[in-house]
Length: 154
Ligand code: UDP
Ligand code: MG
Image (cartoon, rainbow, N blue to C red; front, top):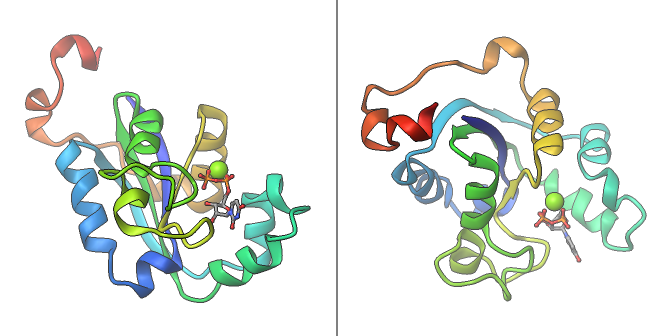
């Protein structure tokens, strides 16, 4: 089982889409290992988006990500990083496939509803960035045998 980090961005908060998106992840069988609401600041965003700080759009992205509190969530599941990225869709909402979260809810390259970790190294760093160890719960729903086969859970 693998863990990944999702952020419900201000575009999800402002447009009241949190419930619909959370439902999608739960329908898929992903386990909520951690969840909380926080206000992002410039320091944590410069860390989180370190690969983008030199881009011309970075000041706008920074501002947008601080316009409202966000919900950060750690999801767990088999191949969770890839599964959640596939469910998230392409960065630009206008290019994201219908059926994906961005494809169904976003029409923007910036205001694209959620963040999702893109690889195991990022997922590990991002979970540590947003959650203290005691805020991540090691628990398994009792119905997990109906989400995965025993082979898949090994
Ligand atoms: N972004 C933007 N303009 C761009 C590219 C990215 O505003 O041309 C924003 C967008 O909100 C995106 C975030 O920067 O989600 C992080 O960019 P990344 O390339 O990591 O895309 P993601 O992993 O979110 O698909
Ligand atoms: Mg990214």
